[in-house]
Image (cartoon, rainbow, N blue to C red; front, side, top):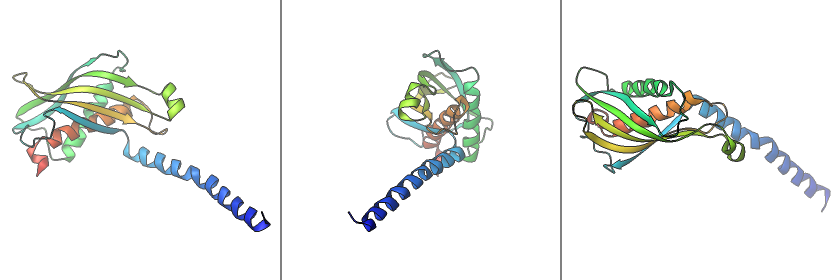
Length: 181
């Protein structure tokens, strides 16, 4: 190998080593701006129905059964605040009318632990959720909702709750005629 080849390899190696941290820094910055992430996976009905929540104008988080015993006190207050903010942004105000309550069972709650050391930062909550008519108690829909953070700068239960609130809001928006327009 001549000197030119060695120099070219050294330049490529240096460029890779210097820029490898940039992707992480950019990802962390984006995560800091976006906050917690939320996903919702409907189980019944399996697909969004824009007419499911016709007439419902109030949405709130109701009873959540913590099957894990690890959810911190006040967690669902953060999720409720995020839910209300997202629904207001979507044009679903909280006027007088029928109320839909989100109830559920927390089946998984994980804060930064061994998996964070091995796989990178990850905190999440999984809720088997139900949309319930507040007056009749009738279950309107079911889903698994996930709140998650996967960045070092957005740690904490409040950010996980923010992601769960976003998941709940997306579920409601997908099944409400106002947001479907």
